[in-house]
Image (cartoon, rainbow, N blue to C red):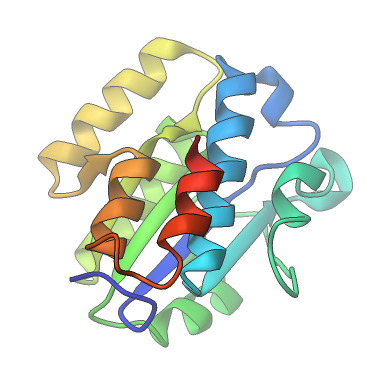
Length: 179
């Protein structure tokens, strides 16, 4: 069972100048914001990345304002695992589950997921919290990730799996967030 001790949330490049170019960007922002609130309530450790912050901007306020003690890992690589600081941080969670959200599905998400799977992490991508500029790129990336052994799910489904029961201490808080 996934819980705060065996799971980490990875937020890839949900940045000011990148997200507006994505298909269904309003859904992406809404779902991602709600998901982050839920995972924060569940006390799931969170790692955020920013791609070339100087050019692409900061993480969206709707995202970073919902993360306690927000910080990010700066990267210039598409595959997060090719950034030493990220690799050091994620290695603390070896053998654990990584829940992935962000952009772009067919670039940074896909390359990072493949590297995580190759390192024997369990990987879940949140289909309603990822996007690409082109829907076809997003759809094919999801199929490739699934074929490679990644799990494709929605944020709400994953959150309720982590809750396990309506007796969970944050159940009422979660239901307010998702509705």
